Image 1 (spheres, rainbow, N blue to C red):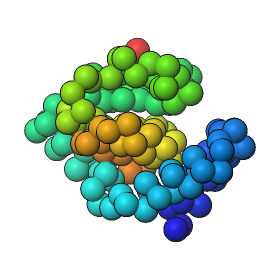
Image 2 (image 1 turned 45 degrees about the vertical axis):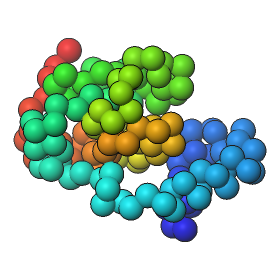
Image 3 (image 1 turned 180 degrees about the vertical axis):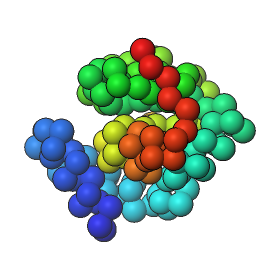
Length: 143
């Protein structure tokens, strides 16, 4: 239940919760209850290994300003607000691994849940986001 409230807070901060029908919010809440956090959260060191071993599609859902300060190598930038309109840029195969990240891991959690709801099976969220990646001194690409 706590994850459902966190999602509602995040959606509210994005201005989306008020636009969603109560049944849609309930469906999203039910979906989130089914997902085991261990199945989608990766800490920075785990994410680095995940990238090296599985060569996932890496999705950066941060703002353009945030991305201008650096990003994970080989990542594709699609701001979360543009994600529904740019799904064609994601892998066609629903079982292709995807690593999603933002600045802190909160916004990317929403994006990861959305992708899972769309049927992507191997979506992982970088716990702690880009900040945790930097704290571990992992590779960063600059524009």
